[in-house]
Length: 289
Image (cartoon, rainbow, N blue to C red; front, side, top):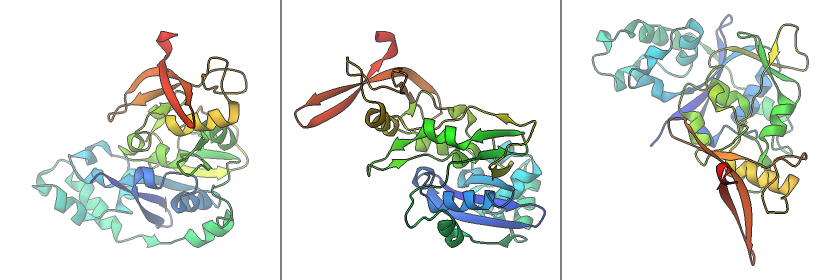
């Protein structure tokens, strides 16, 4: 059935967490998702550790890849001892058994809060279909940041309903594994920085209008190839040969496939073919030009 995820923001010092079941990763990783609204709302109040936690941490010895206390605490916000017991044979014999006991013990200690209604009101969710992409998504653990306005400009897409939307940076940066490939199943914009997926998992994040000295702004973009193509076509148009433009500077839009293991395929331009009332977007390998 595929991996499901939980959006988790947690304050280690105060033992407070906000946890939301977000189903499949690609179902609730967008700018209009209530979970994204909630996480952005919390991060605009104060720093929280953030984890888009998948349930596959409880299978295939995946817990061996998590060693930091803040990561194990993040997992404990949405999983308990019984989750591992149901999925792993000979549990006491595992090298990571102490981690499972730690998760089980801490699962019961969290003060759980919900801010869904507050977040929808804060971002005027009744009228707006996106969180605000202003200021910086800051990683205090790594002293890095994402310029949210720049991220939105480079990642904006048009979804199946015809509205402009964006895969939000926070879910992709903080996921525990396997989610990004689900969101980019159709392929990705060549500008995407899919290698950053999961690299902020469990880190202390905040959203602020100001960026402190000593923090590095990083290049960050996550965009589905089909949805970004439609956005670029509508926004920038095509050149004389019918190729979709990727910006106002006349540069062609480029996309690529992404394997289930996260490996990028060959880069292609996209050419528009019109037949009567039908329009098709056709990939053309860059090497063929």
